[in-house]
Image (tube, rainbow, N blue to C red):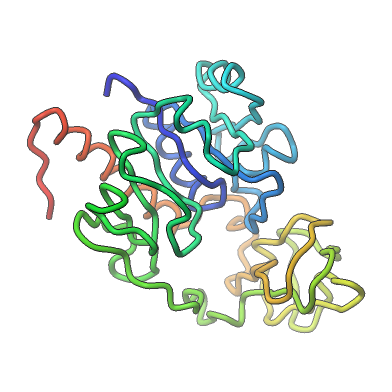
Length: 273
């Protein structure tokens, strides 16, 4: 690719797993996020650069960029640039070769197939050949990471994937509207019934035994029912600080789609199964 700039919308764990792999493969990566990201798996989400200024995940560093000039300086140094741009205005400014919508909103919030030579959507909400060139399946199971060139990913079921025998039970949700105040830290072991956080004085307790793999940043305002935490029943603390199997599978699909679509545009043969 003559232009190797990839712009990723979103900075959560799946977006970050994708950004990590593309960076390791030599692509220049820019990620766009909102002013106050609500990611859960914060140690492995490059969105944390917005709060901390810089974050390193498995040897790859992302830095907060304020404007196009800083973006260019950061990517020229081999790091990922993370910018606050909720309206994605930098898409037209930077003119990337590839746009990947990794917001995972379960619907298309405005991504258009004309935004770049290659446009990829992660998960449901996109139709390949209509609003994106390709879709990558994000549903756990046999098709996880599969590249879709015609049609859409599996629809959102609203039920979290099964990990260690637990689905919805492993997810922590806000019991009320209010400010999220943590009592535990990511990586801590918890038992069912342990106090994890409080919202407006209302306790949020651990739903199962395990390790806190994800937890919303302290002090953010949340609506009732919002996902604010994630307990991993496998209880391996190392999982909290490394890219997940799901993120790696999705990243592989994004890389496959990116390379093959780029080859097709140059007239080369790319075989799709």
